[in-house]
Picture (tube, rainbow, N blue to C red):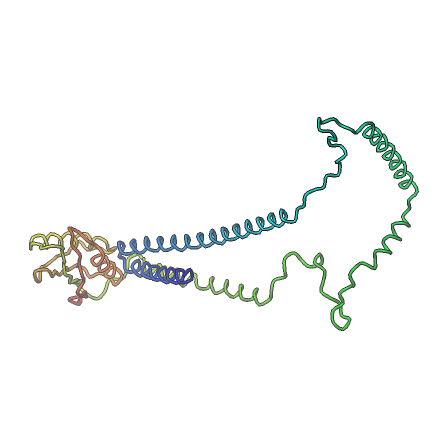
Length: 305
């Protein structure tokens, strides 16, 4: 189920990102904003999935650890035996609680002090007389208990010791070449992507086309039962808003009503292709007075002479 969620979230993020770039290219800002918000929501969903998976794994490990600790504690309790009463003679020997230790405890204390003094003298004498030869003899006697050297098959040298291995394994040559090729390809693609983005979002002045005017035909749709006056007001507001979104001068513009809900806008002089795309995107994307518009067609009219 988790992998299905990852696949679904990844496909949704790719879909939203694709339409985000597409609407930005078409200058349809409201739709691009909606796609951007949707992309952020999907990214948050994927991040939450990853965090929940990590927390679930951590919780499962903690539960297993607690179970192992509890099992070890239970086995220790089962293997524990009652300690025998080694000093039973100290206990009360009479019903009235009278102690019958007599002088045994003082004698025991004096004997312990004497034995401690004798052990201290022996330790000092042994420390003063010991030599390095004793340690070498002890090492020789313990050499038989060491593991044999790992020579591998056929007497060849075995693997290197852990302390002889580098902390970080050396990088592979193929990985270095792949990284270098990826970096070179990325550097080469940057100018192309920059130029394409500049062309898609340019605001610089373009060469005027060989036409006298640009015509855009669009249909207005409103919710409910709109009146002709409401349609005309919405169409005029939409046209005046979108014609000012272009970079070219379009002071001379007119809007004519062709049918009940179909209008034709004419701009003089003619708009360059990029400004025409911006105008179309604005009309398709904008909404005013509960109205939306659909572009039926556009083109250049009356070639210049």
